[in-house]
Length: 382
Image 1 (spheres, rainbow, N blue to C red):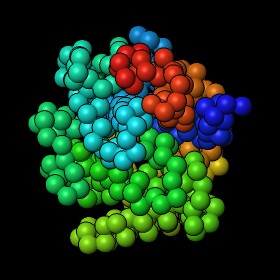
Image 2: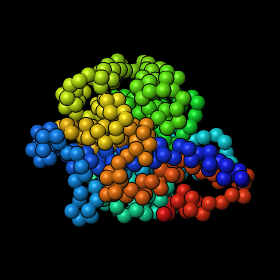
Image 3: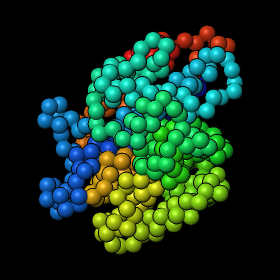
Image 4: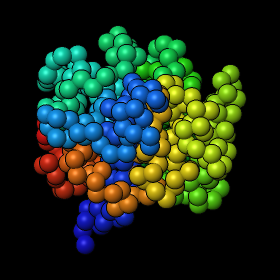
């Protein structure tokens, strides 16, 4: 077996969970998108006492539509892989932080939402610009749009605003899906940095660090505390407490996630428990609801995402993050076929997941070439 074949084979054991994490997020997003702006009572009035439990299909396409959450997650992945390819093909071992390249990919996403076809030539870094469906506006977040329109890039140390909205945490899962490493501190901080590109409040970017950690443990294992999903959550929070130990909002964040963990173990109705965690309008609330639903239904993907979207809040984001966690924890094969059959852009999502799994295998020190990879991540076309 050649070196490249061996390297591919060694990565394939993670493919099911990487596919599960990326597609699972899209499933939760698509289930929650139709009820994103409805109250709990309006959801029951429209879908019955148990709320929405199946996709509401778009009458024009017959598909369950994804929202800006999945769009931005895909562009996050595209930016990561663009950066990795640029580094590998240059032969330079020093890594540029992924957030730098992801910010460039977000500019591509912004142009699709601002009513243009997208950037061309030397400006573009994303093959996703060639996917017509990704030019559809699916309620893009005001903070994301305003931040990207400014032409500035925020960071943890130099925040671009004081937004703690959920538009940061809902898009960072690809970081946790892609990188395999022993020391997760760097990776968790990069999760925060990717969120901070547009969201400058610590309650907007600290949850992104924790989600990155949970997803990474779900795919690659190695949680020092134990082997349960709760262990992964608690270790992620401990890492965040160390990375952001001087942050004034850390105690508030810790209390909310601790409450989510505790509530997941009681026997009350999901609706009552979720109401004690907020509506998912902010990053910390989205993570709290996703942690609650994922721990409560750690063995049942469908029940987890259904619980995550049936509340009067930001249902597509809570569904997406719950889907990221449970999908990466349980794997693609554990997701019921009914969620896969009518999901918009399923093939593109799985293609991106597989790219996250294999990564760039091209190097100036090898004769190996991959024309498909080079077309996407060097020429930026599909």
